[in-house]
Amino acid sequence: MQLLGQVALVTGGSRGIGRATALAFAREGADIGFCHLDDAEAADAVAAEIAAMGRRVMHASVDVADIAAGKRFADSVAATLGTVDILFNNAGINIRKAFEDVTEADFDRILDVHLKGMFFMAQAVWPAMKARGRGCIINVASQLGIKGGPNLSPYCSAKAGIGGFTRALAWEAAPLGIRVNAIAPGPIDTDLVRRNSAEWRAAFEARLPAGRFGQPEEIAATALLLAGPHGGYYVGATLSPNGGDIMH
Image (tube, rainbow, N blue to C red; front, side):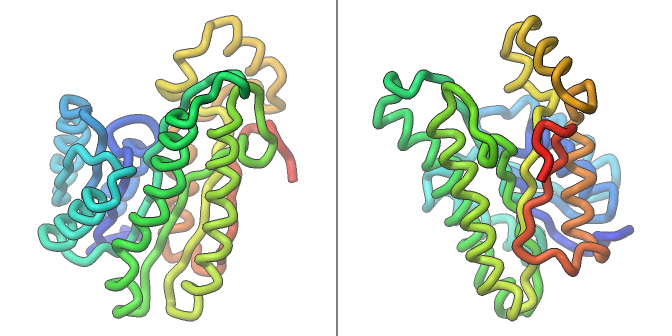
């Protein structure tokens, strides 16, 4: 087991990419602390799956945009399961609006969840990682932060910012033994994608070189690479499993 004896903290862990990654980490031996936002039923189901693997697990409803709440949760995971070895910074939301219709509240909410929440969750686990001289932080960005997209200005801005944050933090982290990288998924078959019309989904799939949307488990496999023993030479990288939606 690649992660045996380690503790992983996963934000947005009750569904989609977060759920798949929490389960993948658990299968590889990690104990899991994950948060969600008012999604107790789904969270309980994920926790039951993890516990059935023989792993320790805890979860709580946390708005990662509330910096104090995020730190309390990180501290609680460390106190209950042990010092956090891996942070999978995944929580996110989206609000689709034309540029001229975006309100200050819309903008602040998206940036607060994606960028500010991610920044300060990393800061919450940083002192213990620094003291031990090891740790792994994986930030979930998006291919839309690279290519952009209509009616997504705040979301694309936040996701592009995650790339910059990842590279900047990696400069400080690597000499301390802490690995910081990002994943920028392409279109993945999650609840967010399924909210679009069937016509939109079919048209999008038709123009993808891969001919299909990705699965959350494929992103989890990328996270496992970065978190595991074979990911040690990735520093400030952004891996983008995206089915060919962008090639760079």
